[in-house]
Amino acid sequence: MRKQINMGTILLGCILLYGFTNFFNTKSIEPVETEPKGVVEFKIKLSTFELNETDLFLDAIGHYESSNRYKITNRFGYMGKYQFGKATLRGLGYNVTRKEFLNSPELQEQAMLDLLSHNKKILQKYIDYWDGKKINGKVITESGILAAAHLGGPSNVKKFFRDGKVFKDGNGTKITRYLTHFSGYKLNLD
Image (cartoon, rainbow, N blue to C red; front, top):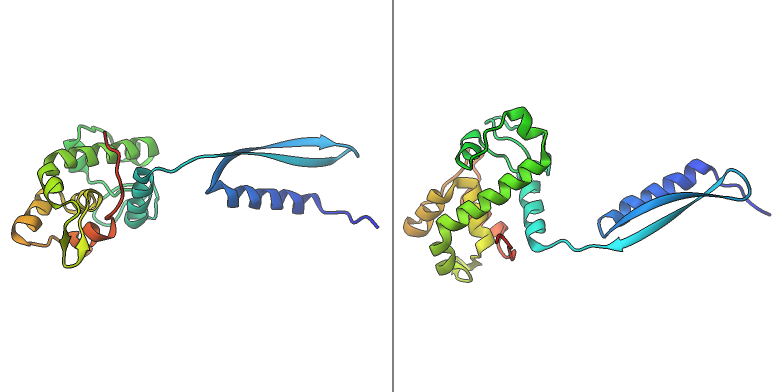
């Protein structure tokens, strides 16, 4: 006995399979009509890809800052996936409107990479000295230092390492939280 399967069920199954495997693979789905007339099979081509640690770091920071939402603005006016302030954007040379910034994921990603590179230059001697050392049992790394600088700026990171002064943002988040939470990523910013 041959059972008939609802076409919507098959399509839903393909969509779920596509979504599930999307985290691990890139692919294309091609519908192919077969006999008997009206039966459609879906062939899925899979090809693997790698996420590098810089991408994983950016995803982790974006998740923490905004749940990886590009079009969000918080109550303090910080914008996008990485919660940029207008002054920081201007300091990096970006002269864009709020709307332009929020509507451009590419611009937000580039701005974050530019900020990380900028902060790395400013904090290089601190990175060279502290990378791999421990504070209160927590390993300090370049990625943690740069995450802390994203939250509080490089001057507050310097104050922490020089004087032990712990900066908190408007939400009460301490730079030490970023320093340890985002530690351990091998960043490729060159």
